Image (cartoon, rainbow, N blue to C red; front, side, top):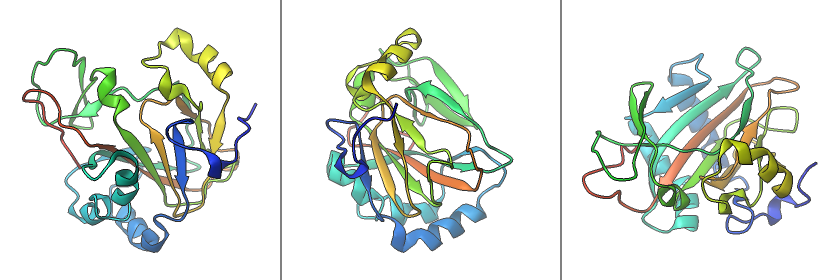
Amino acid sequence: MDYPVELSAMTISHHGAKIFRSAASEHLIELRTLAERLPQNHAGLRLHGIEDLGCYLSAQGPIGQVATAIIGPDATAVRAILFDKTDRTNWSLAWHQDRTICVKRKVKTEGFGPWTIKQGILHVAPPFEVLAHMVTLRVHLDDVPATNAPLLIAPGSHKRGRITVHEIDEIVRNCGMQACLAEAGDVWSYATPILHASSAAIIPTRRRVLQVDYNAKQLPGELEWLGV
């Protein structure tokens, strides 16, 4: 059952998600060109050290400005992934919370762990309060109608704290489900800990999404964000 809310009426504070229509439309050609220069045939490519992204993701850039509107002027891009779903890579993703962040080096810190390496990048699961102060942006490089595997969210689930696997089904039933439809150039924002999922596309066409996590706070001790 779809959650009975108009997409334009959704807010980060209440629903855990908000759409910024056409926020990246003026830069769509450049972003698509940048995506084409990256390694292809990756369902999800983790991005780091790509200088051409900086002007878009900085606090003054067209994408960064969306983040600053939500978490303030110190918003900094701390992780980026390019998702490229096609008829050859038409995957589905079960309901889950994003649980990890990227850091420069391993420093034993209370509450942080376990540690993993994904595509050569060091990840760690932080305390929930770190995730609770983050926002995730999804920059749509292609149209995402209902048939092209839109992101599914459980509105309000970002307020439930760390959710165990056994709680997921009940929380999704209680919160309902919202499909985050989009046109190319739209930017969806959501509270990083929100429960979300993705089905395989019914009518697979290309669906490229640049997903960027933002944070406005420093990590404790000697831990440092890796950044983008």
